Image (cartoon, rainbow, N blue to C red; front, side, top):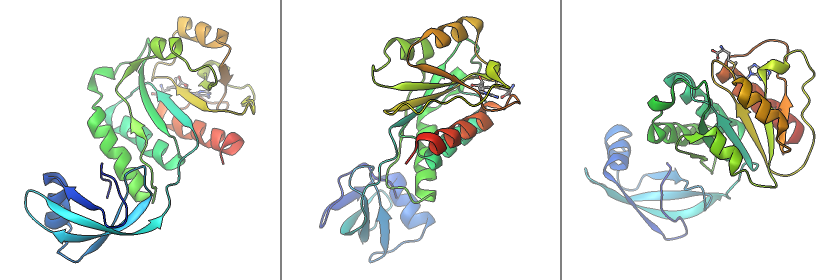
Length: 232
Ligand code: SAM
């Protein structure tokens, strides 16, 4: 279970109404039951249920079962697409080890106003719990691509997945340091965006092979290529 509370030996962890409903109503846990907790900071802890209730409850941390394992410092920036496909991208980004997930408004982004950051964050928590992670990446509020590029950190490289480069070799340089991956929307990048992304010194245009992939497929392919070339 993911909790937004410090974890440590003897630490008591209060539960809110939703968590109590899930643990005691849906999972039918009783006092004395032991479950795993993560909070993205303190690793994974076994905790015992010491108080149950309809509106809340209390868990008591016992032992550290796994230390915190941070993913590589990789951002996934993507233009949101249809709801369930955007959820798929978030889920796969967590499984593949992105540290930060940033939906971006590009010139041809159609689905931006349907983005629900809280729902996507819940998908990230679920995906991390499912794959046994001890860290849940932050899914951020929608940001304008222009703004992200204007505020770009000086040491970070950008793997710009450019559908217009199809047919060229993959072309990811093995420059060390933190990276970000950029995936465009259904309609691809506008000519103005492409021109800018080709001119920026930190941006590396990359092909994902000879066919135009759907944006959700492209996100998984890009994460795989990056992990293979530069991940740990
Ligand atoms: N119309 C499709 C859809 O509905 O999803 C295709 C979308 S494709 C234009 C979306 C994004 O995936 C592109 O902007 C690019 O970032 C990435 N992409 C897809 N195929 C690619 C390829 N072969 N090489 C590099 N990037 C690719």
